[in-house]
Image 1 (cartoon, rainbow, N blue to C red):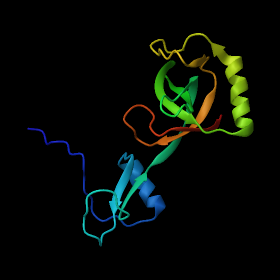
Image 2: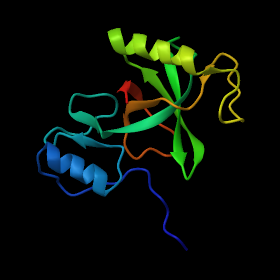
Image 3: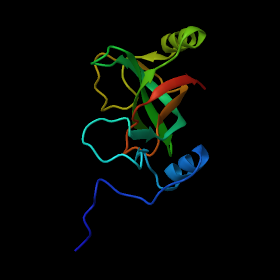
Length: 157
């Protein structure tokens, strides 16, 4: 019988600097680490003795279109990866651009506009689709399970 997969894993005490932490994130393909101050007793609920540290990374993705988040109405980039000549949907990232970068993006959106998405199964009626020619720099959680998580557009490539 195969061992059960557990959601919580305990580790030995980890001592190191920031570089050691991020090396551990990469080596073990972690999204982050939850740690607890050693001295206080455990109490359920939120506490200042617990710390959640996320492992972020950066990547470049092709822009497929722009829509708005249904909860916040903030603009989002709909993104893809080019793999072996095919586009694979990667997820959405909030657009965190300001000033000149935002204006440059708006100009490129107008120049690359198309009626239909490059990935046929995408059905977002509110999206403004573009030809997948523009590459964006994106900060996102490392080692997510498929689609981008906690992603933000940081610049144009």
